[in-house]
Amino acid sequence: MQLKFVALACTLLLVACEEKRPPDADSHTPSNSTAPVLRSELDITLNHIIQQHGLTGNPAQTPLPSIDSPKAQLGMKLFFSKTLSGNLDVACASCHHPLLGGGDNLSLSIGVDASDPDVLGHTRTLKGNKAPGVPRNAPTTFNIGLWKHVMFHDGRVGQVTAGITTPDSTYPQADPKAGDNLVHAQARFPVTSSAEMRGKNFDIGGTSQSCRDLLAARLGGYAPAPHPLQSAETAYWLTEFRKVYQSPDNSAKTLITEQNIAAALGEYQRSQVFVNTPWRDYVQGNLDAINETAKQGALLFFKKREDGGRDCASCHKGDFFTDEQFRNVLIPPIGPGKNTPDDGSQQDLGRSLVTNKPEDKFRFRTPSLLNVAVTGPWGHNGAYTTLSGVVQHMLNPFDTAVNYDVAQLKQPNVQTKQLQQNLREMLGENTDLAGQQYEEQDVRQLVAFLQTLTDPCVTNPICMAKWTPPPDQQDPMGLQLNAKLP
Ligand code: HEC
Ligand code: HEC
Image (tube, rainbow, N blue to C red; front, top):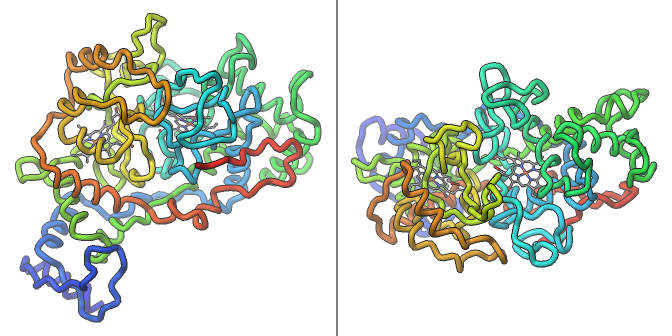
């Protein structure tokens, strides 16, 4: 109390209180020294910035489900089950594992046709050493319930006045089957992608909707025979769904629907709220929660250019560190590109694939930066494999992109042949981020700040155990993904 009062007095009176810090002030260990830590000049400046930006430290102000709710528990089982893929070889967790930062540690995701479907992380490869077919980096599912407007790097699932638009409805029309939140709406799409989960031979010639319906029917045991799920497996799922929906007599056909599957997947993912960061502690008054270097980094991050800052917060806004807008910031164009013609051009047009507007070419959604230290590789295509690399890019996109070194890619066979040509094309459009001169120290400080945005739970397997199911003894066909992690 006393400490808070002194700190407050220092701020209100706009005086720099004498800085008294424990000897280990630069470490994360909270001080148990009795000498009160007073706000330094740096703390006072940061405090003003925190007020100016209206930060509370806590982006999770709306109610989100608990992982202990029965629906989230069912969602977790489904999220880790390979039954939702055409060839029974991929689960959602294959690309969004809670112990891999809610992603897969790959630049470009690998879904179907993995050499070993259970191997996750940077050693996951495709059979026959093929080049990755999924064009983009898997974003984290952590804090997914905090997005208010758009899902995906290009925002193709998004809130519109009449509801939620998706690739199944013409943009910007609402999709009547989208469900009642963005995460539910999103969960209906990975299963329809042939490179992610569907495979080439499932529901051949069918639509996205027929694919979802057939997967649900297969899981519920009411799909036309022959299908690969044993009756013990479908009975197991019926019991699970009946428990959650508290309807012991309802049939699989009414309970195991593509909508109920997506709703449960959404509930589980929305329970992944990891926002208890050192930065939050600091914003909420614990002056010792982050070290001096990180505080300098925070200044650079939030201050405007004219005030000597780097103005990162003009896009990475607020407590969730995103404005949910789309920008061309020149991330080096590697990978096969999304929906590219068969001419080998491999260019990913980003947001304009959704809106068809030429000015949206090469624009991608501003990512949140919560837990960013554990969600690499970075950029919509995982072009950067170090956090300092992507920070340098954000400081000076043009020079960094032109000098981009493909040798940093850890994943074999990522397409880079078109890199220079595609980059030139990108440079021909309006870019949305101007370069600035910077020192090595700026990078170090910004990286230190970004590291304070990690909730310690996400790097602690014991804390994460709630979101990672133990091996399921009851799953009759053993189709739960028990990942072999790096
Ligand atoms: C093969 C890997 C792979 C699998 C399997 C997969 N995803 Fe993804 N996921 C991705 C990639 C890549 C993206 C980004 C695609 C884009 O933006 O174009 C993504 C995007 C998402 C997003 C949006 C994140 C954001 O920040 O907007 C969510 C949520 C998500 N996936 C959930 C799921 C669920 C639920 C499943 C299972 C039904 C699943 N994913 C299966 C790779 C995968
Ligand atoms: C003009 C808006 C804008 C500004 C200013 C900006 N960013 Fe970004 N940032 C983006 C966008 C958009 C992306 C994603 C680009 C992509 O994937 O193609 C991004 C990506 C990132 C990433 C990678 C995150 C991930 O999950 O892949 C980091 C880290 C980052 N920015 C940090 C910063 C820092 C630090 C600054 C200030 C030096 C900054 N940004 C300034 C818009 C901006």
